[in-house]
Image 1: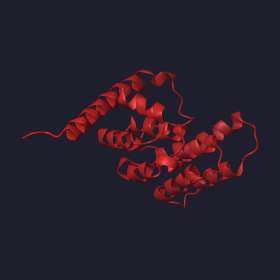
Image 2: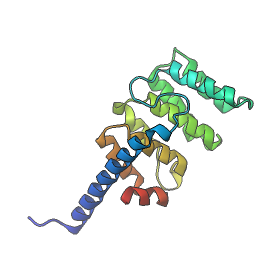
Image 3: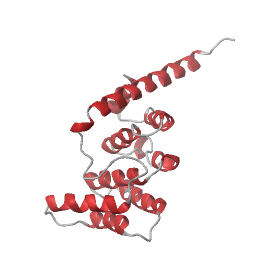
Image 4: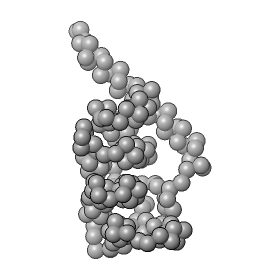
Length: 177
């Protein structure tokens, strides 16, 4: 059986991505002591909204700036016990997708959504990544990719493959190395 060149090229790219993801994962584990998690744990499954809310409150006391409309939306979602985790994640992703929100607020909402999302729901996160002119800003794509290092190999690979046709050349070059 003869393999077509395109099939071989795709296989090489997939293997290269897996190697890069494994190396990046090992590097992040080694650098874990130097990283910050915005005042809350970044592990999966144990993140409750009250822990996320407490982390936001603690970080706000370090920043005496006025609370913005966007921060209030995030705080409302995190503090409401009547909203399911799935709906809270969707609401946070809607802030992430809003181009009127400052990039730092969008990233904050995305980080909270990533902490609430379980592996089986990660397709919801991947669906907001977009492509071409509708692609998320580079910082937000990088936040998603960084989060995948704490997730299954399948999620890492499918997310990396979603980045390849994108326009963020820096992220693509890092993924292919």
